[in-house]
Length: 146
Image (cartoon, rainbow, N blue to C red; front, side, top):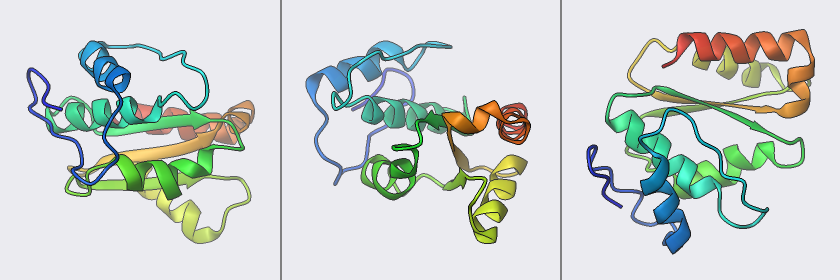
């Protein structure tokens, strides 16, 4: 898909987007805020990744905070981003988990810094936002990224 301003073309070997996904990306990429209230399985992830990629290429953002339920949030790291994100876009992916291994916590610290030209993804489950630690991590990420 080519947007009007940023000329971003999504990953070539990703599954072809559905028509409503293309339309959602075109309708929302230029907005400061939006929500897709689609049911599970309707393809919300693809327009979000394509929009984030276009905004990164255009210099508008350098980070994406993904908040998902506990049953789905790890799918972003192992399935959704590898399948839909153009690997030519420099990026880092970190998953916040209170019970994660040390290496995982180091990745979170790395994406919190936002010191280079890289699209950072911080993935956190919604339940973590009920804790001070989870809220502090999310807020630090948002403060350090645009």
